[in-house]
Image 1 (cartoon, one colour):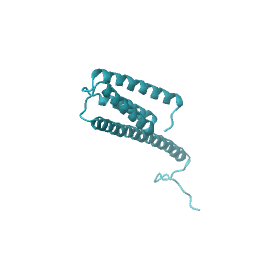
Image 2 (cartoon, helix red, strand yellow; image 1 turned 180 degrees about the vertical axis):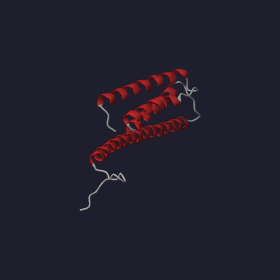
Image 3 (cartoon, helix red, strand yellow; image 1 turned 45 degrees about the horizontal axis):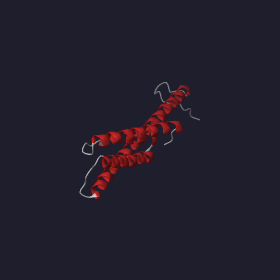
Image 4 (cartoon, one colour; image 1 turned 90 degrees about the vertical axis):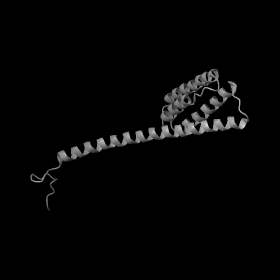
Amino acid sequence: MRCSKHKTLIVLTGCTVWLAVLGWVDRATGYELGLFAFYTAPVGVVAWNLGRGPGIMAAFIASVIWYMADRYAGDRYSTPFYGYWNTGMHFTSFIINAVAFAKIKSSLDQRHELERALVETREQLRQVARVTPLCPQCRKPFVPHV
């Protein structure tokens, strides 16, 4: 998926700021208040506008920010493994969302391209029909017998 450098920069900068502010809010509200759904939005925006690869990178960044916000908010697990496990589960969910958003966008773009090609083809057929003589009885294209 190709985007202009300007659009790419705007989307990446906007979503980075969005995730940073979200991380700050997440840390300020404490680890007991889950903001998981809010982390999905910037991941989806990146995947929608820039594609699957950048979406997966945004998923990784969102996971790290979520993990750091909870750690600095004082989360307490009985073993560090649980913190890593939860982060992995968030990352997996963010990846699924990124891939889904990118696929939906790709499918919509493909559909729009097919619709555009169909409109062009119909117009070409109309132009051919205007110059092709029709049989006066059956209204099918007239082909003279040689």
